[in-house]
Length: 107
Length: 116
Image 1 (cartoon, rainbow over the protein chains, first blue to last red):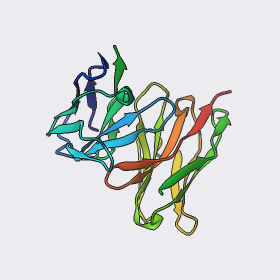
Image 2 (cartoon, rainbow over the protein chains, first blue to last red):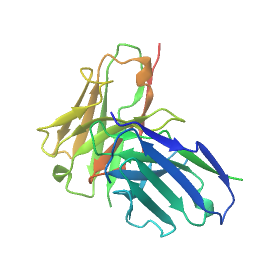
Image 3 (tube, rainbow over the protein chains, first blue to last red):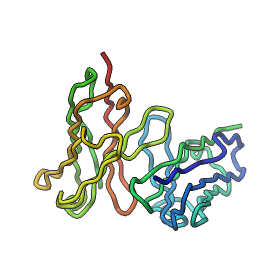
């Protein structure tokens, strides 16, 4: 199965700062990678799909890039509601797998 | 509005069984793959099982193969997860999720606790 490794585990930033999250796949995921945001007590919600396409209603400050084995989620300027845990997920090969998450916390 | 509502979670002893249900509304249920994804609090989500639109194809994670069975009733807009031979490591919040090539809608989750 494709193992997704996210880094860093925790990112401590202030509102207005730029966040850069990484997701590395153990074998190619092509472009079939998504990013999800999860807030405490809630289910994950889809942010980015196909590595770089924003899901419906997602603000432009969220962007995704990458292909193959290296992917990046960038939040250009953190808003208070963006402090959460972010997961990547691949659907290039069964079983579909998730990363272990990056927590973006307020510094 | 798309809604997914899970039910059937609870406390069960090791070796026991439980059936989760997920009632869907707000979209054409019979045209979508549906999945179950579980998550231990503080850990990443783990895909468990998926079922094709008409139920003719199913997929399972190796960790649940032979113990869990996914099914659906398109007349009732409901997907099920029958869980047998439950183990402590199956303890998690179980989410159903709609597949539009990715998991674009999720339910609120059902907590399953396997403990004596």
